Length: 311
Image (cartoon, rainbow, N blue to C red; front, side, top):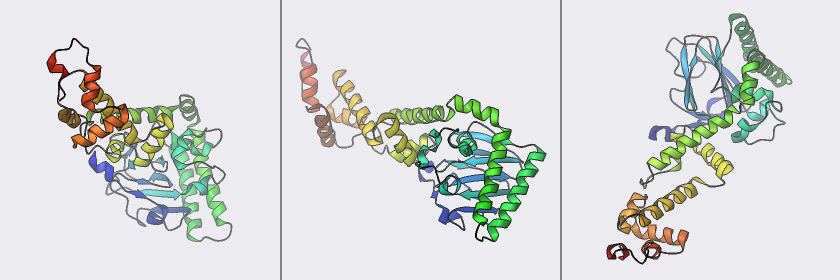
């Protein structure tokens, strides 16, 4: 998981020739060979050998004649075979949806009636967009047209390219309309988000005693970017990751103080604090009392002497 905490996030200027829209084949730019994210939309088209795609926390088939729709900041990776053939379309949010005033991290919450163009991107983790030959041939004609236009940009060319892109997305939406609408009604993205947050929560629980527990590591465990996890935590809980971890550590500290005789130093270590003095300060700030006094005040008068001693 630690390696996922260091996955790169690319901007359009790093992987594209233009800041708004760029289409290329494998000859123009080598494919990214490991997990990564980018700040822009991406469509990958498999023109060659069968493979798979890793997106979010799932692995889905990615055979020939299929398309992958990837939202901004979504962790993904497609291991292209050496003899594979693919095409990439990268474009910014303002290119596709200039009227949509929405943080890229909130795109999964946009109703499909408001922006149906987002549908394949929102449900990629749940659907495989594999096309029959006639439909894929139509998509390929649009791809060739976009490549030709992108190589000779003139006034008005950008709008024609966008029209081709919308026609491609619209074709996929029409072909997969029934499952897309079913997933929208079932709130599939929200369920995926809850599953990701549950993975994060379990990782925090198992690693609460680790002083090196971090947002990056927890985000990797949930197959999210740190920005995504921070954003979702604020929306779902109103708390930062640090606040959430401290709250859980203080809860564990209270439990250990009230249900045993471990010294404060050992409790500090079990709660992920390498420094006992710092632990005591944080505990006092949270509860108004230092750990030892908190334990003594909670002890019943009949408790044995050993339970009333200050550790």
